[in-house]
Image 1 (cartoon, helix red, strand yellow):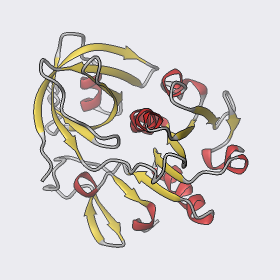
Image 2 (tube, rainbow, N blue to C red):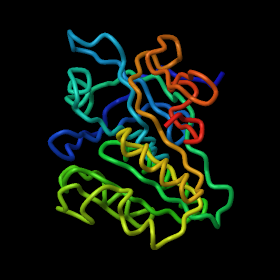
Image 3 (tube, rainbow, N blue to C red):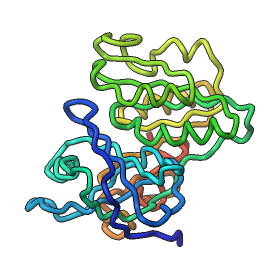
Amino acid sequence: MKQKFILDLKVVSVERLNEKNVLIKLTHDAELPDMKPGQFVEVRVDGSASTYLRRPISINFVDKERNELWLLVAEVGDGTRTIAAVKPGDTLNCVLPLGNGFTYPASSSDSLLLIGGGVGVAPLLYFGMLCKKRGIAVTFLLGARTASDLLELDEFKKYGDVFVTTEDGSMGEKGYVTNHSILHERHFNQISTCGPKPMMVSVAKYARTVNIRCEASLENLMACGVGACLCCVEKTTEGNLCVCTEGPVFDVNQLLW
C-alpha cells in the first residue's frame, strides 16, 4: 500500500482567479512528501455545519524549491466555499497523496497533448512541468465556456505551447476542444485529459479514432478517498473499480464510454 500522510499544511497565499476559482498555496515545516501528477488530496472542512466529509482536490502543482503544494479550488458547494475562504496563516488538514497519477510517454521524443476543461486543467500543470523537465514536447489544449473561465494560462505557457477554445468565442477558437484545428495540424503520440465527463468522452472517442494512447483523470464523486465508501465506483472492462484508489487516472480503453 502506498504511504499516505495526514498533515496540517499552512496557507501561504490565496489568489482569486475568477468568480468561481481560487488558487491556494500551502507549505509545511518539514519537506512535503513526493507527489505524482494526477494524484489528489482529501481536505478536511473545518467550520462548515453542513459538511462532514473531506473534499477531494487535485494536486495542481508542487514547487519543490519553495516546498509548496498548490490546490486549485472551484467553489461548487458549502465545503469548497469554506476551503476557498481560508486566509494566509490558516491551516488545512490534508490526507495525501492519494490515487494513481498520469503515465509518462515512453520516449522523450514523443509529443504529448494535455487537454483540460474548466477546473479540470488543474492536474495538467504539474504533469506538463515534469514532462518538460524530461525533454518531452508538451502541448496544452484548454477549453472553457468563456475567456474569464480559463485558468492559469500564464503558468501553462511556461511549459509548452498553449491553445484555447471557448464556447462563446471570446478567446481562442470558438467551440469545443475536440474541434480545435491543432488536432489536424500536429501529430501527437499520447493524450492526457481531465475535465467535464462529456468533454473527456469526446476526447477518448477522438483518440480511439486516430489510434493515440489516451488517459483520462476522472472526477467522480468521492468521499473517503481510500476505497471504503464505494461512492466513486466506475464501470470498467475489469469490473467496477473505485476511482479514488484504482484511478483517478485510467487508460480510456479501460472505460466503458
